[in-house]
Image: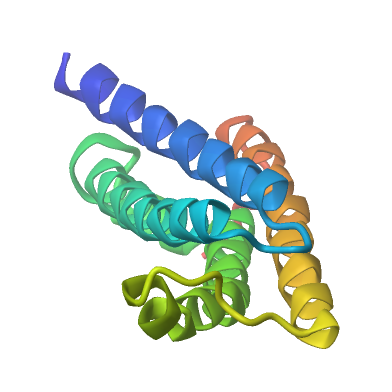
Length: 152
């Protein structure tokens, strides 16, 4: 039963992560209003929390409820999944740092300044994150079917 609960919580965290990133994509458009900027700021914080939950539940599944850490460490698709997750985390730094720079303006009740160049880079980062996140479940399905296991 604990295995099923751990898997369920992991899947919920993944769905939440993807939904929050889609919401960020939807909210992020020019011109940025004060209300939307505040929503983006809060959504990005929630995205970070969801990413931590995905990581925590994934680690719990690998260490406590899965096929054993040895299985995962010998699976190339597991390494690819983790690599994609890390790439998403790295890509998310640019939007997060952009939103954090908005704090003074938000505290003053003003819409934050946003250049066209920054807007393009934030949009690109969010879209790349979404594209990479879509690939992770494919790798998980292949891994569950026994693909990616290296001999040794």
